[in-house]
Image (cartoon, rainbow, N blue to C red):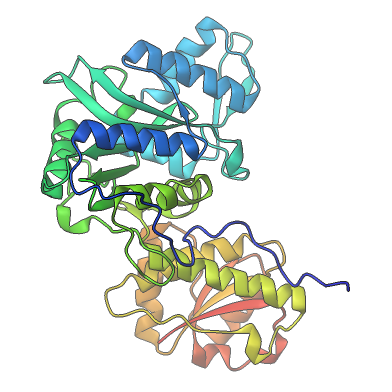
Length: 407
C-alpha cells in the first residue's frame, strides 16, 4: 500500500515525553563524579571530548574549527588580523551581536583587499556545526585565577558553560559561582568566554539553564549583570514535566538537534541589549504552530477549520515573545506570503508593535487605515500587526496568509 506524506518535520526541539534514563540509585555524588558522568554522557551524544586547559590551546582549536566549517585555510597574519579585529570585540553585548545578528562575518583578511565571509555558526544546516566538550579550563589572567567545570564549544567557541556542585549542595551556589566568573575572569585574556550564551547549573538532583543576560553600562562593560536566580529555567518535555536530574537533562537538553536549535532559533537578543532564551513551553508552541502551517500547506486545507488551532498560555508566560518568534520563523517560510498578527482593539495594536520592536527593530509593519493595510498586504511587508476591524473589510481578497490572533 502506498502512502502520501502530508508533512515531515525535523526532530522536535522539545521531546514529546521524556523517559527516565538514570540507572542505579545515586543519592550522593561528588562534584568530580558528576563531572565525569556528564562528560561520558555528552560523548555518547556525539560530542568530542578535547583536552584543552589554557588559552593558546583554546584559540588554536577555534582556528581549526573555523577553517573546517568555512573550508578555508587562514594564513598566520590573516588569522591574527581576523581574530583581533572581529573576535576580540569588547564586551558580552558585542559578542552576542556577532552570534545572533549576523549569519557570517564579512571581513577583509588578506593584503589584496578581497573580502571573505566567515561563519561562526551554520544556522541553516545546524548539524554542520562541531560540538566539543572541555573541562577544568584554567584562566590565569583574571582578577583571580579560575578553573571552570565543563564548557561546550560550538565550532571552537565556548557558547555554553556548565557549573556543577555535589548532590545536596544548594543550586544557588553554582549560580553564584558563575556570577563570580562573570565578574572576575570571563573577560580576561582573549575574552572568548564572553561568547557564552547559555549557562547550565546543576547539583545532580536539580538542573536549570539561563541566558547570559547582561546589560552593559558605558562605565563598566563586563561587570554589570541583571542576572538573578529567579530567572533560571527548568527544562521540560512537551507535557511540561520537568527534567531535573542531570543525567536526564543531559540526554534531552544537550541532544545535538535540541541545543543547536535553542542556540540558533530560540535565543533572542532584544533591542535593549537583553539576551533571552525561550522556555520549553514557548518552543513547543512555536513548533506546533509551524508544523500545523506545514501540514496545511501539504494537505492544501487553507481556510478550513482543521488548518487552524489555538495555544493557551497564562498571563505573564511570555505570549508576545512566543508569537514574535513564531511570526518571524513563519515569515521565512518560502510558501507563506504574509503573517498577520491580529488584535481585537487599537490599544493592543500599538502595544504589540511596541513589544515586537523590542525584539527586532523594524521587523513589523503597522497601519492606521484599511487602505494602508491593503497596501502592506500587496507589497513586501512580511509581518503585519493589525486590528480585526481593519482586516474584515477585505478578508476575501487575501491569498496564503498566516493569522496569529491575540485576545
